[in-house]
Amino acid sequence: MRISDSPNQQSRSWTRAAVPHEEPRGDDELLARIAAGSQSALSELLARHGRGLRIFAARYLGNAGDAEDVVQEVFVTVWKQAARFDPARGRASTWLYRITANRCIDQRRRRALRSFIGLDVIRDEVASPEADAEATTAARQELAIVRDGLSRLPERQRMAVLLRAVGDLDIAAIAEVMGSSVGSAEQLLVRARRALRDHLAMAAVSRERKSS
Image (cartoon, rainbow, N blue to C red; front, side, top):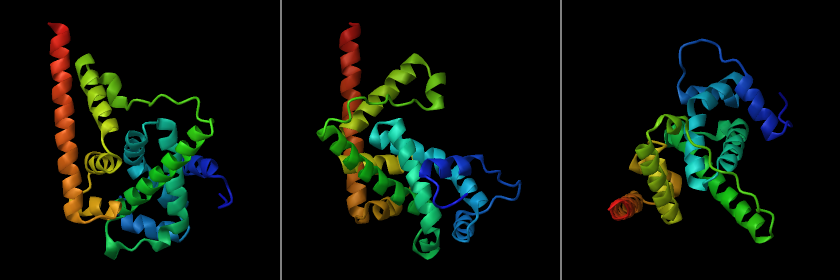
């Protein structure tokens, strides 16, 4: 694979690349090998974190197609900048989510510009995770309510919730990704949880009224 390949070509190449059946390596070691030019290490890192990053981006952006584009951009960035990762400054997963969060913000700006100039007429429907297909009708309805509540949160609250729920990051890591203090990150989560609880409660009342 050439570095000059397009991001889509690179992503397909990494996805297809065979990862040898060896003992699992840590993320830090994989990034060191990527920095040395190992495509198999990049494929292994993508296999390990790609799904979580896609879910995070899809929930944040509200669009599965945009999320896929973002994750492709993230791993192009990882391929080019793996040597810049410093394990002494934090976990590799935090670094990956920080890159993804920044790319999501960039994608929202691009989408807003497309909408402003009239090019964003057709919007892709958000693809449901595999788990949605197996969920009961009630569970799918509740999931839809949660997603609606997430979409109504202020941008930074939504990002904090997704980093916690999807990225499984702790408060310190969330603060690092968002460029805020730990206290500010905690407050974002407190406000977001309160807003989501209120949204779920209002939805429950509405369902009861409709059924009565």
